[in-house]
Image 1 (cartoon, rainbow, N blue to C red):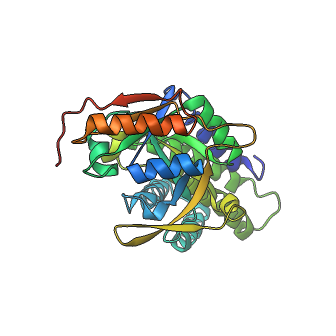
Image 2: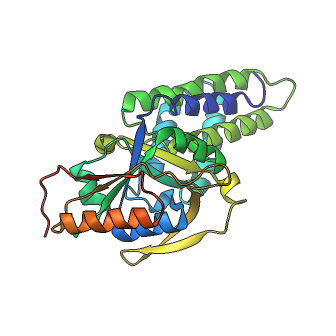
Length: 291
């Protein structure tokens, strides 16, 4: 196996998680969010350590180290485990990954409650084929989140087993150098998958993500900040329109609100003014009242 073998395997795993999406994916937001997204023609990608599950990035690292430890039966593997523990200790609390969340679910009560204000919100629908193109334009990884523990372990073993093979092929290099090289590859690959692995309690959301890693993020526009519930939240822009791709908002669903008809009229006028006359306006079927 060559020196970039694990990177190639990880890239293959990420490509698999990009397959078979629904034709349309959705993003829940407030009225201010709707205005901001359409006017700026961009989303905000949030730093992963500031998402609603504050432990999700640690979930994969901890699961990986636990799974790896079960297969440590030689001194070289034990040395690699120590190398990995040291690398993750330095990285786990400062992950420089930025995430944009989407969902297969258009009209889901739990997401109206979690991601829109009680006075009313919107669910924006985008054609997945267009999102794929935008992922490439924005240099982002695009993929489906993994929730099941068995699937998570299968993905991680796809990295662990070839790493053990690399340890055997030292090619006249010192053991310490081989261990450090394999440790670097493994750490990088696990971190790339960690952004798509979530606790199974979130499974009903059927989330897809755009992800931007530290190497790309450092070369992008400067980090900006917004506030949520009094906290500063770092974000990067995700462009919804480029020289090659115009803004295409396929649908907007109006969430539970005491003024549904007024909200619908205002939304239709707004979309027309913004040149989005082909955007489909839908209403929630969720019989939920929080006012």
